[in-house]
Length: 364
Image (cartoon, rainbow, N blue to C red; front, side, top):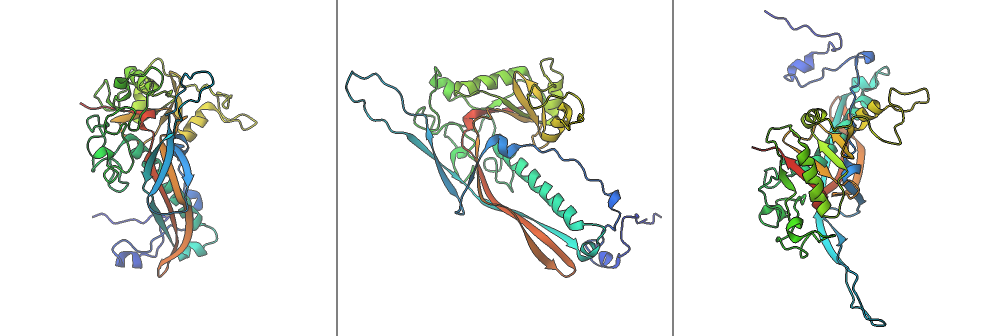
């Protein structure tokens, strides 16, 4: 027979806990030094991939932006050229509300030696960061999530989904995040326009592509060079790779991968110096930037699955981030003996420039 032994960090108030079937008031007591705050990595997903906007209206938001449409033409001396008009494209962004309730016991609030409220709110703030990172990555890579509403009809966007305007990928009600390339497959009449010497055939190539190695987590240089070409055909320059930890391990085996970052802002190759300058590897652990390859910055995130990764031109934002209301904290009183706070925010995401990125999928 095994008898349960309560730890020193558990309160002796087990009556209400047992009476409620394990959901009642059992809390940590004031051993503050025993609580170790874990380190979290801050991936700047919002700043990397989204153009931030604010709005005072609720519900779905329609945003309009211009497309490259005007061209210089030869005219006769002294004559007036024909007038040209800017072509516009409208995209609808779905704005939704997200929140998290944080409950603490009154006993912990009254204990002046331990600030349970601060601890709970800090953890809730990390939950917000994790949620936003996951939301951006899932929408950007076309991953399906029932709660977030990403993907198409409950499935991941794949190499056979069809980006030329066919199927539900172009239907806002089925794919509110707009991860598709063309509209109807007709060049210069939809979402894409020729740039440089790009041919029509190059322009409509899909940007959800099959990896050269079907094994999950495997990354080949051919996948990177292919993505660089596809993005370059659109007039953009790839500068960022977003990979999973499994792909990072594969990338470390490549001789061309550079772990030492070439950045003017990072001058100290070791730990922090006397002046507080952050070293290369300390900086890497803070923002997920793990190195460079072919001049592209490499970021890693645990939210990216081992079955796909993305290559992007981060100088042009792929997504619109519309914020109706920033993160706010309100006091709540959900029940007797329990007080807490409620965090909520209203925002929307949508991929409006899918041509500036390529999603590589490891699939058999």
